[in-house]
Image (cartoon, rainbow, N blue to C red; front, side, top):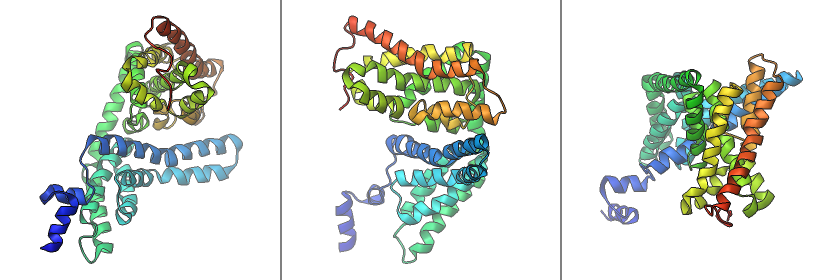
Length: 359
């Protein structure tokens, strides 16, 4: 009884809630939709995206070494995503390592919608694994057994359904963008751009939905508008360091300023509403590289690299129009428009010096 009482006192509460607290199982939007998704995007970047880039280097240089390494990296996609999710959920070692099998099974069963299947199933498997971890004297068998059985069992049972749902939603967005490139170009660009700046993962969203093609181009335009837009808009406050950290890093750095003064977000959103349809209607810009690249923007130049890998993998030879579209949509237009809107907003007194200063 003394031991049980001690556990209750340590957890701060008894019963089921006390058990969840002791196991660090937190059922919340922050933990699952933000932490887990952001980690999943990192897992995707470290496997599928890097594999795609290396494979492209191999194809361009004729050095098969890069193709071989790229193939290995791409093959580890499911496992990398699941382990990254488990890490974000603060899983103990036995759970974390067991998630490699869960991720492989989920990504395979989910097909084109594999990333979403991995996200859902890895979260469930990880929490079940955490729940039983350390509860028996044969933990070395029970924890990985439960994690793998729950995860792989769910992958076989619902993985194809989750994948089909993600593919259907992504397919609808891509179909709608082809049908209405103007309005969908605006909507996709603005929504995905906003997601990039929010503390959620636009890259994971695009990957989960398999967002490529014309819709992928609009998504990329919106992300570039946010990153380059904030970099240029805040130049007076942050100088060249701010240009690099936001333009090649992330516009998420501005979330503190956005929370204090939401109107500063209007400029990048307006820019994305313009560059999205420019990408879809004027340049017919299709991002056919890895879907994750559609939600990366200019972060590490992954978005433009995704455009290029899409051209190469599709056997297309990019011409002047393709290169011009990439340069204008990803870099020049966001910079010029943000600069122009910035002047207007400052003259109107909407944005003032220091509003966009990074800590």
